Amino acid sequence: MAEEKKGFFKRLVSGLTKTRDNIVKGFDSLFSGYSSIDDDFYEELEEILIMGDIGINATTAILENLKTQVEEKHIKDPMECKELLIDSIKEQMYVDSTDYEFENRKSVILVIGVNGVGKTTSVGKLAGKLKDQGKRVILAAADTFRAAAGEQLTQWANRAGVDIIGGQSGADPASVVYDAVAAAKARNADVLICDTAGRLHNKKNLMEELRKIYRILEKEYPEAYLETLVVLDGTTGQNALVQARQFAEVANVNGIILTKLDGTAKGGIAVAIQSELDIPVKYIGVGESIDDLQKFDANEFVNALFNVDERALSNGEDNE
Image: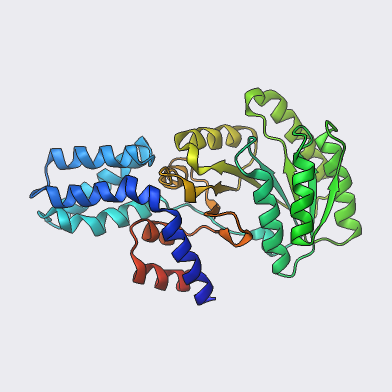
């Protein structure tokens, strides 16, 4: 397990290269470029954080925390701020709960997200991970509005070695979920994962679709624990934060799957999401393979961002 975590940490460090170049190099030049901690120092630090997609609210809180620490500890040298900054960022990423309850009981996972964010791929990868844990998994192809979604999910179901329940293109998503629930009960499935549509341009329709699905689950499968995950594309930066906020308005969102972090300089959005929405990022994607979807650990993420190897690895082993 430790070797596996070390391997993923290396991939995470590599995957965050663009984000690191965008944020951390700015920090390094800032710390080395100032001889004292003054208003100009904080102003430039604020700009680096905001430009790194950490968000205005999270940036403000990080800076306030840092200023308090600097004053209390009588720190004069900017270079001594780096560790405090790392800890302040971690503190802002704290959320009340990051439970993976669906791993421990009979569950339904609703996965929502707009087209193009990697939603169907994330469903397939998550199914593979749960199957590897020895769980009986069924997929519901309830994103019936995107023509290729069912076919794509079928490919992932075959790759993961799990069953799939689908419907005709354009069919009522709730009817697919109804059939999938019946199959999950008949086959004694541990987890039913539903790939659902996410059309934010018409929130009223989306809300109505989700209400129908929730009603069916409440009526037909009340014994199952319900988890709702939103998939967001890390390359979209602040747009991902806006999407998360909008989805949280129409659904009881338990967590975030943040994809495509390996191809973006906007990985700081993970900080903004947890800080501003208090919704945990539960999984991150830093590559194409099924192993590149991994549980998110805020400490490990920040350590990888700053490439703090030894401490990150020890934290990673402790936090498993």
